[in-house]
Length: 69
Image (cartoon, rainbow, N blue to C red; front, side):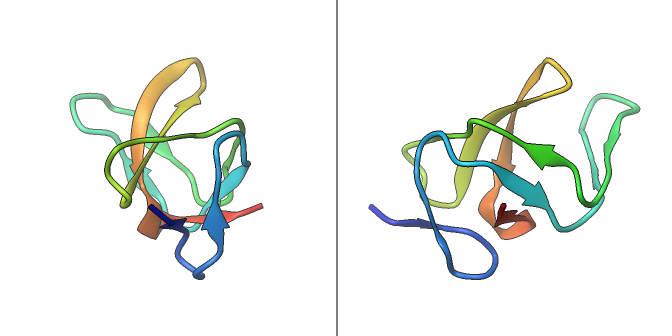
C-alpha cells in the first residue's frame, strides 16, 4: 500500500512532514498551525491517515493536510 502526501510524494515510517493547513483538534481548544513540523510518523492500515505525536499528544492526521519535509 502506498501512502502519499498532498503533493503526491510517497511517505514511509519515520518520515517528517509539515502541516499545510491550520487544523483544529476535536474535543480540545488546541489548533495546530500551518508549517508545524511533525517528526517520526507511523503509517496506519488506512492509506489516507498517519499516526504521529504533536506536542506530546498522540493524534491521527489525514495525509491530505501534510507534505513531506
